[in-house]
Length: 98
Image (cartoon, rainbow, N blue to C red; front, side, top):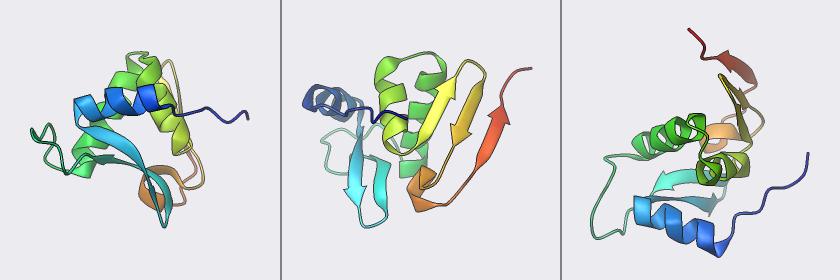
């Protein structure tokens, strides 16, 4: 699978929303932007939920963010792979259709 780039423009847009993709000792993670003057999220988990929700609405920015942590979104499905969601080693296929 081709590496999807996370650009400075992507980072600026994410920070404006109150989150970003951060490099940690566990790898890349989506976290809330703790130093933002105005907090948009109460927790990292809430920020991740926002990114997933927007990705499911077909936002390219949010899909690129999830790709950085090895989570891939297609209509109605989310695929989690190694290192997804805060360093957990998850392999799953989630069907979100009704």
